[in-house]
Image (cartoon, rainbow, N blue to C red; front, side):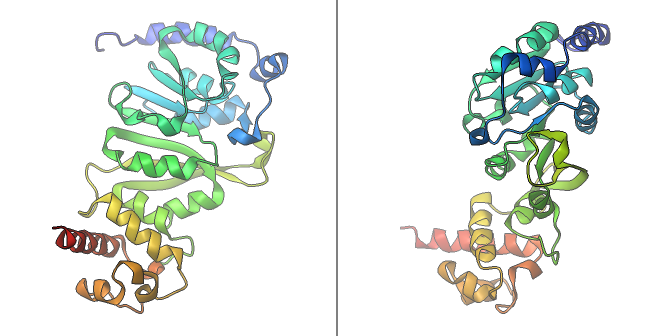
Length: 294
């Protein structure tokens, strides 16, 4: 046990205080905190479900980071599953009122950061190993993921909730109908897996879609060498017109010449390419850009 780390006994005592808190739904109703569509909020109150999500990320050593705790349904579960250092980032000012009793029970184990997750360098927060557990606001979920992938090596794992269709895109493999830009970027730097689905009925208010919990475990280094900015550029063009041959969809960044330079069939379509081939295109694009510089 390192300096400042809580002992198992201290965590258990804290958890007893958390268990004694009023039911979350009753607390939210009493404070009239309703989910806001503008913030992409859908609350989870089922402790069995939230603890299942939190358990998927164990062991919760180092710092655990939660995005958008809202009233604290998943936050309670993460603490009850043993997190000793939890940072919760929330832009909705109402959450601080609802979370007061949980923060009192958790003591130093829980820190609330009132900020927009899009502005937070979470890869610098707390101590390693960092784990992210979050029911992400769906309207910014993919933007956050791409940003975090730039710093993937700073995380031990990311256990995240997405719309089912987005989860399928993240975990897809070459040749799958869902294979796309997100698939390439995520699996270039990590192992990805869908853990389980969550029905709409589990949320308040219930969304019109099924959700999935996925786990992303970053690799020590990317599978293939290239810079993410160029890989993003190549995949954005390639999958932006996924039904077209690559010589057409990549025309603005080199088209057929770029493809022939790395021995890729110009008549292929993007969903046919392996991640290694996209990385080869990214390296070639970078080399071309350098040649243009004075």
